[in-house]
Amino acid sequence: MAKCMQKIVVMGLGYIGLPTASMLATKGHQVLGVDVNHDVVTTINSGNIHIVEPDLDILVKSAVNSGKFKASITPEEADTFIIAVPTPFKITATNPKAPDLTYVEAASAAVAPFLREGNLIILESTSPVGTTDRIAEIIAELRPDLRQQQIYIAHCPERVLPGHIIRELVDNDRIIGGINKPSAEKARDLYKSFCNGNIYLTTSKTAELAKLVENSYRDVNIAFANELSIICEKLDINVWELIELANKHPRVNILQPGPGVGGHCIAVDPWFVVAAVPEEAKLIRTAREVNDSKPHWVLDKIKAKAARFKNPVIGCLGLAFKANIDDLRESPALEITRALAALGVGTLMPCEPNLNSEFSEFPCFPLADVLRKADILVVLVDHEEFRSVDPSILKEKVVIDTRGIWKIM
Ligand code: SAJ
Image: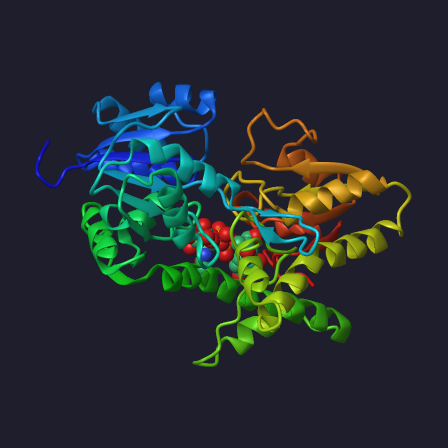
C-alpha cells in the first residue's frame, strides 16, 4: 500500500456510507464496508447497489472490481473507522422528537474491540451537539486499556444532496471538528485524498451544530415559502407569480412552496436543535410546525375540490419526497396519498415514474392513463415527466398544483 493509503472501515452502507466507501476505494484505500443487513452486503459484494442514486452503480462496481472494496457484516482492524449510520428521532415521555443515538452508539461499540493505538474514528452521521464526545466516552468505557490521547475522534458531517451525491462528495467544502486539534488534522489528511473542496477545521461541537444549522436554515426558508402559499390562497393571489416577482429584488431569494418537507434530513435535523434548546429555538420549531402542517392543508384542499364530484378519479402525480428520485422517506406526497386512501376520498390513481415494481402499497398508473381518466389532478412532486404535460389536457381538469410546475393557483 502507498504511504498515504489506509485501511478504512465504513460502518453503515446507506446513502452516505456506500458512496463514501466506494469513493475512498477508487482513490486507492483498502475499504471494508460494514452493514447489519445481509442482503445489502451480498448485493454490494456482487458489484450491485440497493439504492437509487445517479452514477453510484458505476462507482461501486469499479470499487468492487478493483479488489479495494468489499462488504461484511462485521468490522476488522483498520487505520480509520467512519461511522455513517442513521440518526432518526424517537418518542420519549418528555419529547416526541428526541434524537435517537442507538445506531451511533451501536456502531461505536462494534468498532471498539478492533481499535489500536493511533486509530482515527470519524462520525459522518448528522448528530446532536455532544455526540462526538459521547463516542469518546463509549470508547473510553469499552477500552480502558487505550489512553484517551491514543485514539483520534472527529466529526465530519455529510453535506451531499440526494440526486447529486457523487459530484457533491468530491466538490463540496467540508467542515471537520475534532475532539482535539490532532484529531481534526488527521481526518483532514484522509478527506484530502478525495475531496476537491476546501476543508475547514473546528471543534466537534461546532461541526455538529453547523450541520444542523445548514438544514434548519433551509427548513426555515421553505417554511417561509409554504406560509406565503397559504397567505396567497386567502388573498386570491398567484403565489408562483408573487415569488418570481419578489425574487427580482437583488437581495431576495424566496424558495418554492410545496406539499410539505420530506426526506430523512431537513424534516428531522432541526428537531435536534429544538431538543437541545427548546426555549431558545423558537423560529426553528415554528418552521418545522409550518412545514409539517402543509400536507394537512393540501389534503383539506383536495377534499374540498373532491366534494364537488360524485366519486371523482384523483390523479396523484408523484409519491417521492422530491423531484426525480425514488426516495419515499418522510415524503409529504406519500402522506397525502395515504390519507386520501384512508379517508376513501375518490378513486385514486397514483403515478410515480421513479418507483420500480417492488412498490406494492398502491397500484401506480402510467402518466398517460392518469391524464386521460382523472377528474382532479394533484401535482405532489415536480418530476421532469410531469413538466412536459400538454397544457390543453389540463383545461378539462380540476388541477391542484402544489409544486407550481404549471403555475396554476
Ligand atoms: N423543498 C421545497 N421547496 C424548496 C426546496 C425544497 O419544498 O424550494 C422540499 C423538497 O421537495 C423536499 C425537502 O424540501 O421535500 C428537502 O429537499 P432538499 O432538496 O432541500 O434537501 P435534501 O433533504 O434532499 O438534502 C438536504 C441538503 N441540505 C441543504 O441543502 C442545506 C443536503 O445538502 C444535505 O446533505 C442533506 O439534506 C442531508 O443529508 O442532511
